[in-house]
Length: 149
Image (cartoon, rainbow, N blue to C red; front, side):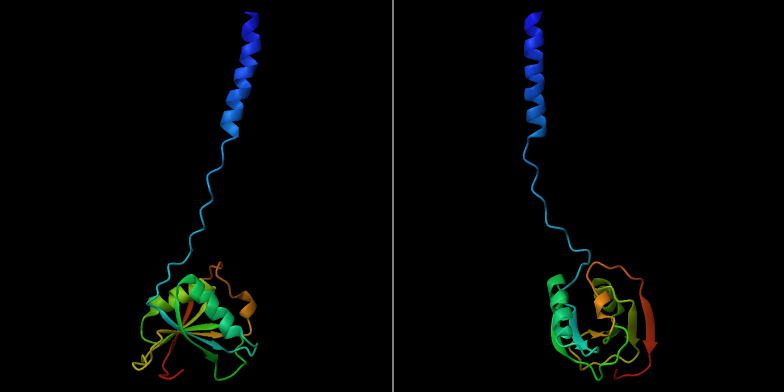
């Protein structure tokens, strides 16, 4: 019986060591929260006047899997809020881009521009600090009757 008390703690220590000292399973890279498609062609316009902001947002979209075709300045630099515009009558694509950036302002163009390559335009406004890939903002859709926004 004396041997039992010598062997039992030794077996317990070995079992505990074997159980808790295993190598942890390797961490998997986090999956993207948004399923982007290379088929969604995006134009990013700087509407806030901060140098390089269209490029910064364009790079974020590319990293998420969107096909950013154009980086340029907007028609003006006084957009108070960032907006996403559906250019070809494909609102689901505009929603994906808006969700990826956390932008709640979306405009659906009534008359799609058939000569446009990009299906979605992002105008980066003065609220650019709120744009990110992790935000979930409920969309607010505005319908525009203008054919050339």
